[in-house]
Image (cartoon, rainbow over all chains, first blue to last red; front, side, top):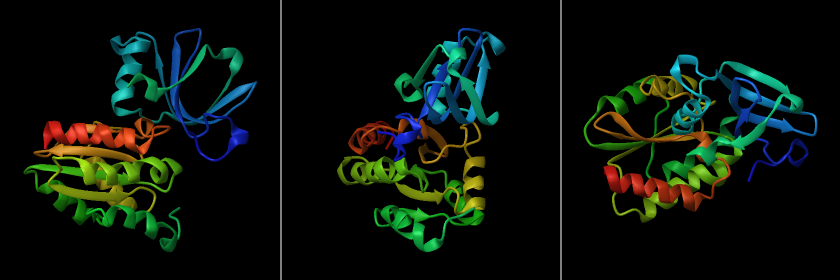
Length: 91
Length: 139
């Protein structure tokens, strides 16, 4: 159940984990996702191993308490995205 | 920018009619957090759809049906009562801002936190069950 903007994709309004093929992983609220890109709001990001935390470690902590906004908006081409999952799935 | 008061009043009343005290000033918030004895539930209210469809109903259900309940109920309204909300968040500095969200406190410490992402996309009954479990454990 997202909110009431079907044209923005089923994840509109949902906080998602966006993993990339590289070292970077993002968590933010999905504004829009289509065949080309995903637009995230209130985004935090993490680099694998930074601060001694793997991507999985970072997501596990975020799932408990949430994330700190580092970017108000971030647009990622889907060519740079490995997976998109709801953060709620990790609780 | 806050919404017109008449628009959000029904959203406030969904919680006040369930027994919540509205914390509309920094002083209200200081008084709420200053009394550290026992248990308390703080709800950060919001105008968003997941607050209407899941957060507020889940709190109502949990309080109606849980055997154990928090001793004190308070709420701030994010995006509306800006200073009160910021003050409340300052008391929970380890938790990123999240609205709607819910914090169960015991003796002044957060013992269970339900952030927005744990509300989005879940049924009110499911969240209510989580809250009731937390009440059972801590209250």
